[in-house]
Length: 449
Ligand SMILES: Cc1cc2nc3c(=O)[nH]c(=O)nc-3n(C[C@H](O)[C@H](O)[C@H](O)COP(=O)(O)OP(=O)(O)OC[C@H]3O[C@@H](n4cnc5c(N)ncnc54)[C@H](O)[C@@H]3O)c2cc1C
Image (cartoon, rainbow, N blue to C red; front, side):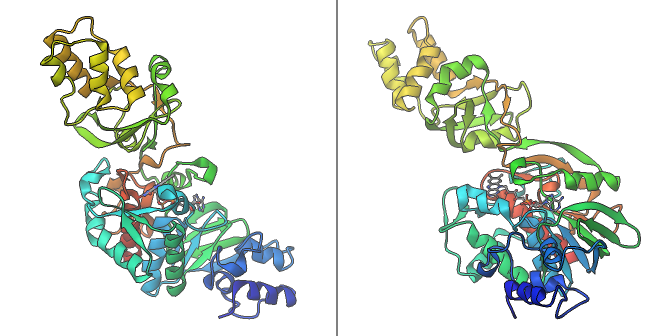
């Protein structure tokens, strides 16, 4: 097969007349290779709009493309869905606004993509219906995704708590998904901004330069996090257009902001990190907490942020499994210096000093020391807010699960309309669970198309 660049050059030489496959010209350019592969990088944009520009740019009428299924969004869920459907012989087009596929995958896990978690259970997900995710998660497991990763000889490692990361870079995962798409003959249309979706006998999607139709439409447009990277509420708009309920959306896995008094007490210690148990209600997470310039972050805080409601206090055990003041209680030397030395055995020095100064007892009786011990294990903080969608990793809420089949992700109301990935009201804990949901819900839909 010739490369996309060769094809584009050939089109240019032919004054925009496409040499082959006139009924589906985009497959020439897009089905063969994806953005990021070496020959394409020199093109300013790669997709239907690039093709039209090269073909003379004077076309006013839109090109019409008919497929078995259209998938909106080339993120983790959309690509997995396309691969599964393509493997089953479906003619699939993925329509993506951005100039490349899988942008969030590339920045995930600090650039190494925490692509799944060995200990994936339904308890690792938040949804109005705690049972909804079970079926898809059981039918596409972490072992399935690991097998795919291993079949592409991608090196990976377990970092902690079952979290699997690429050894090299997240690019390994996007390259793998793109290769699988090519093998499944999926057409990927990049730089494709969708203007309108209509539904008559089929779904008709109007993009700037193209019109697409198919009996099936899969919405995989993700959530609202990192708007700078192009996140939109398009998936929710489509749901509303078809009368499908949405659960209120809000940022999750996000740093928390401290009230001004706590901020001035602790935030000059930005960068200090310590092992804690952070909890809200019955949800407790033992991981690192990080002090930031405005508040608290780190895995333990990100995890509880998904359960945090405005004005609610969170409790932080700053010295899990340790009795910090036991030595003081059995000693006759009871003063600030001895207490500081004890807390410094459990916390980084500067934070230990700062915390103790803010909680100094008036006396050093056993009862006072017990109270101090209790406060250290139940440091109660009421955040002022979150850092919002700009810094959140994921969106809580979304398309209501009672609107969808848990087996296929198809709408119960509108036949042929599917929602997968983050746009659905299923939100994973930190640790590779959100990608596992994207793979599993994408596979569930892809196998049902
Ligand atoms: C900084 C960061 C780090 C993360 N790290 C991890 C991690 O290590 N492990 C983990 O499990 N999860 C991680 N996540 C969460 C994970 O990235 C998401 O849960 C996952 O990407 C969701 O997949 P998705 O396919 O549903 O949506 P997305 O990956 O967001 O894909 C949606 C796609 O749809 C496209 N789109 C949007 N609107 C339109 C439109 N109108 N027309 C056409 N296309 C459109 C977008 O451009 C995008 O490509 C991280 C998130 C962030 C922000």
